[in-house]
Length: 308
Image 1 (spheres, rainbow, N blue to C red):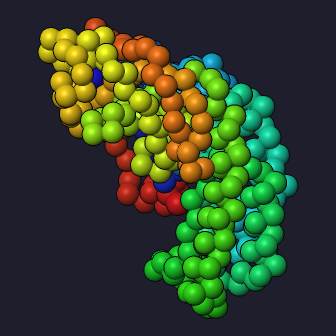
Image 2 (image 1 turned 180 degrees about the vertical axis):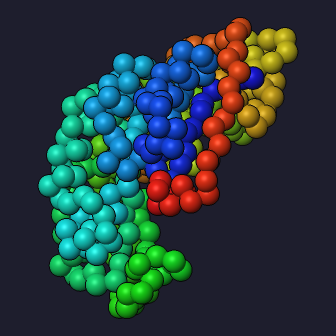
């Protein structure tokens, strides 16, 4: 139907298929999507490390239509805080797994999330988090301040970190990560990349795009100067016409794929690029569709076995 990007999203996407109990898990789902659709970009969001297997990494590495992007929540860098959060990972295991991910999938863009101000978080715990982020060098980090949530074990803990200190720590992480992201993003400059057009700034003459390493709404944008003769060479619809004035506004929904040269990083998070050519534009769906019946939960209590 014209879709250009498919985002797979779950509380823990890596748990996909556990309720099926038939061996059809996330790697098999991804292989099926690649085989039975022609959607150019398939993106995985929110996978906890326990489910990121060598098999899954091999599938991502072997299929260029599965974008080399991994969003895996880390939550903290202090072992003491991770233990209080009841998270299975520790610094050592996070370090080992990040190395494995990057070795298995070259040029992988990695995003994570952390929480500051969790009950009992000391200044030493927080500084450990900063040091660990500096060491691991994630491409992007989302940072949130802790707030009690009814029904969680942490809700019974004494919320001993003042909100003002939580906010200060959030800003310090954001400031550190901004510099890390700017440095990490430099590796994408000077190369050619396929971009997805998400809008057109007709006033300033730019395509608003995102790259495979930029998830929608959270990872910045890539701005591409529209060539003066673009209307004659690549009309967005209708008969070819010259000049920016003839360009229709890009409607919400699927956009164009273009190839561009990534010139430089802008303000640490965004990119400036130069238009090269119209990119690949595959048909949206194959001619033969496979009808599928979605599996239903056998019993409502099964939610507790897989939910987080």
